[in-house]
Amino acid sequence: MQRKKRVLITGGAGFIGSHLADKLINEGYTIIVMDNLITGSLKNIEHLFPLKEFEFYNHDVTKFVHIPGELDFILHFASPASPNDYLRIPIHTLKVGSLGTHNLLGLAKEKRSVFLIASTSEIYGDPLENPQAEEYWGNVNPIGPRGVYDEAKRFMESMTMAYHRYHNIDIRIARIFNTFGPRMRLDDGRAIPNFMVQALKNEDITVYGDGNQFRSFCYIDDLVEGIYKLMLSNYIYPINLGFPDMITLNLIAEEIIKLCNSKSKIVYKPLPEDDPKIRKPDITKAKRILNWEPKINRQEGLKRTLEYFRSILK
Ligand code: UDP
Image (cartoon, rainbow, N blue to C red; front, side, top):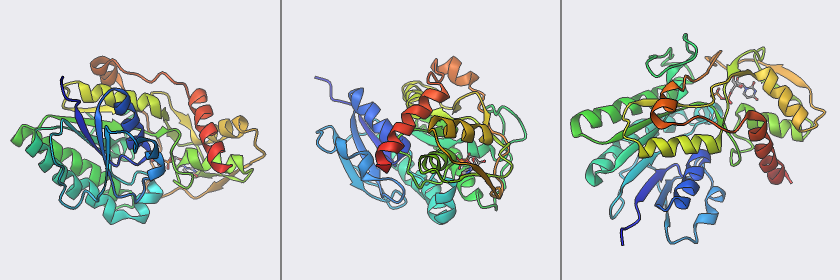
């Protein structure tokens, strides 16, 4: 009998990583989650612990990484991802994208694993082109507060491509746009969890700036499907994964108030420094190369997410 393929997911106790772990277990893989739990939570993966196809390492990938046995894929998802988190732990954020990526590429070289990285729409910075296609080089402030995340992820892409070119490592680069769904932390600080918690508690909804900035929000199940298709493809260049329609923050706040039947009112707070004014993925490549596009509309995604937040707040 053929052995099951083994996959290492760094950051596998986090929001996206844990959903990916579920997906890959369901698809018949053996999963190793590595996480140091600085932003992830064991709650997200506790249901996997009884499975023989599952292993967990509490480890910081900026330190040397050793895994015995074969590894078919390494999915590098470890990183603080919410602006609140990376402002709070900026040096860790830089280290996990740089030193962590280097360690894991070394592991990929040793094991001849396919190496997939969770890059981000933040590599486009505050974009001057809309929508953002993969060919756009971006508009990033390296020394601004968000630079710690943006530059770590840009370095991660460069390092990954260099290992491909010089060591012939088989790579995949997912540029992930705003994503939401169950298992986001209630105190994560991002727009959708903040608005939902505020709406459910009938507290003020904190919109930053004038609320006319645009974002495109993708539901987690769709994103995970895209990552899975990318993993199984042989496409080595960056590929955008996200929801192609955009909406203002004001409108999403109103949608959430309505959905929650909430008495909350919108209040306006200062816009964080370098907060992008617009973000919208061009997913032509994902459609053509991966035959992927999101299927779950925002209303449906918001409903499913709301159920989760309700259950946690109870
Ligand atoms: N935002 C907001 N209120 C909040 C949290 C975020 O208005 O309580 C805004 C934020 O300034 C940004 C947008 O929502 O313009 C999306 O922010 P998020 O932190 O979700 O992710 P980002 O797209 O900035 O990475």
